[in-house]
Image 1 (spheres, rainbow, N blue to C red):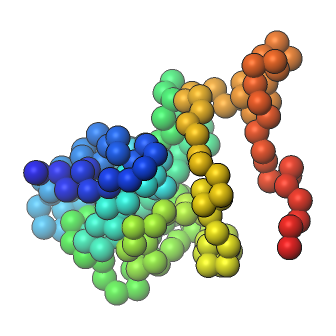
Image 2: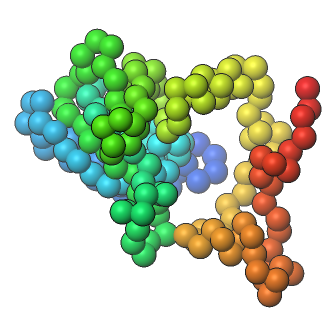
Length: 186
């Protein structure tokens, strides 16, 4: 009963399998003093996974997000793990009006208005312009999942073996669809 964010999502697919990182994050915030701040490395998938929707909504509304930075491509965050890290710095307590959060560890990183993140939708860790394009696409077009059922593939941090497989693995691999492989359809 203690972990509300961890147990609220019940849907099809993999959403029914909660990630302990959500409970860890919820517990960490609950232990803070009023206006206390925490900094955590959590799995980057918490920014988009359906099972973390309640956590994202609560963080967006009830805490002040200072930094949400995907460190998957940051060479300083390199370690042998199959989970891409997300740096999260947040303070307990609602954000001030017009508060912005930073999308990187660098003080010059892009900023977003936190108010746009106070929903259960995914956190798009992109520039504000890319965020606007994604929002317009979502408003105008159905999600791919409405036509196709997503399937869980291989879970590994060795993406190069599957995105551009060596010839020795070619007979066991199916090509990934990339943006450059798509054609204009409207």
